[in-house]
Image 1 (cartoon, rainbow, N blue to C red):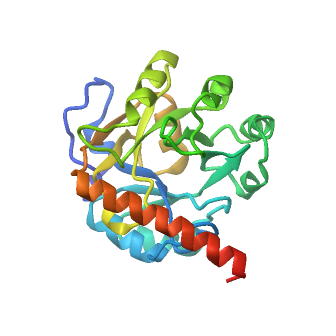
Image 2 (cartoon, one colour):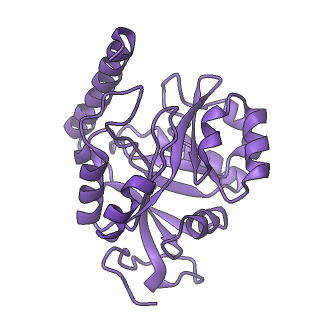
Length: 252
């Protein structure tokens, strides 16, 4: 297989089973203006352009409680060397869960038992626990222990600094439970993209990417944000959530 400019450079991955010409730069947690809950200023295609410019090979768009079908944008993305993966950031008992590469019925999941049934019907999907131990209401925290069986991977979130990093517990938990770790942006602003991502040993195919992650053929590339930049991103995400709530209440 010929090497694509949108496959990440081989960066000294420790697993000897990696094939450097197949390693993809991947992000599985991104929002766009289609999000029904948060105000997000950029369009899907603006995100595609930005991800392509940064050398990403695959991207999952995960709107809050709305399934994203990449079909309308896939040709545009592929012309820029990017694979789009269907996804949703679903709320289950108040906790956010990333459901990657599942069909539209994922939007109907309301309980962890529903999620278990969904995984049985669609075993090629991937369940990721995002921002699992962040001090926010939507984080899984203790629930991740109770529902460890449904979690395929744990997220390292991009919003952290050298002195404040809520990902540490997530990494410790994942290692203790034998779960792969993926690097995600949790993107609400285009400027966030690129500081944290995954390198996945897989061809540009959604099923293959999910299988590679489940098998542990993934490594995180991440760098701490300067404090002011992290604060600005966090404030922008909070503001987007507030604006989204206001728009929902007034029916716009």
